[in-house]
Amino acid sequence: MITGASRGIGRAVALAFAAEGADVAIVGMTDREALAGVEQEIAALGRRVIAALADVSQRAEIDRVVARITEEWGHLDILVNNAGIIRMTPLEDISEEQWDRTIAVHLKGTFNCTQAVLAVMKDQGGGKIINVAAPSATRGSSGVADYAAAKGGIIAFTKNAANEFSPYNIQVNCISPVAQTRMTDALVAYRQQQSNEPPGSLTRGGVVDPEAITPAFVFFASSDSDLITGQVLALHK
Image 1 (cartoon, rainbow, N blue to C red):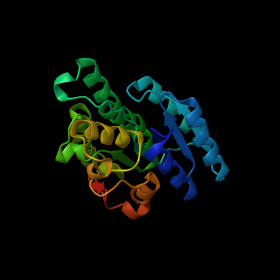
Image 2 (image 1 turned 90 degrees about the vertical axis):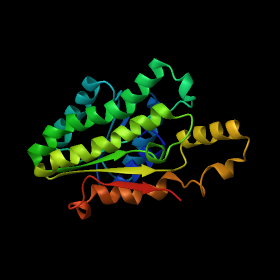
Image 3 (image 1 turned 90 degrees about the horizontal axis):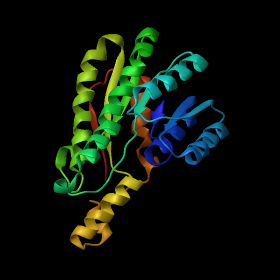
């Protein structure tokens, strides 16, 4: 089950998992057409696919998706918490509404999905949970205080969940990537507007395509990472 799978990193990870032989449940928030496109790409690889629209900040919606997966497939082995939003705003101008929404999608969404799959993974004897953070959570940035705070929370959540779930053979890890997505485009455009510097000077060595970072997700989803939990892996040039 991959959230935020309509495009960008989520789409790339979904296709990488399918190419490795996994059946994939993809979750998007609002863009039904984009999600349907990814659904068709997975089906073309010969894998079963479930596509669902759901707001990860709403637990009932996530519970319905998890119930559908377990009813149709009988198990759920891997969760990738990738859903996210970003709105470039100076800290002093972030509204309470924006703050709450950003935290709800990123941090509460990660909590909701993790808790929703926990009983399934415990009953089946194990599972893999991969969360997605961002470099701004640990090294700081500008215009993303709400986003960075949510991602920092995800890192802390990862480490706590890893400790609690270890007795159940559930590994929980986190990837902190930089890849070409709408979010990085927005960040670079904002920095350029603030500094008047050329875009290439604002990406710290360049930004890779999402497909370039998928091997890390495949590794954390595989049995090769059975002895690794509670780790944060930074992926950027």
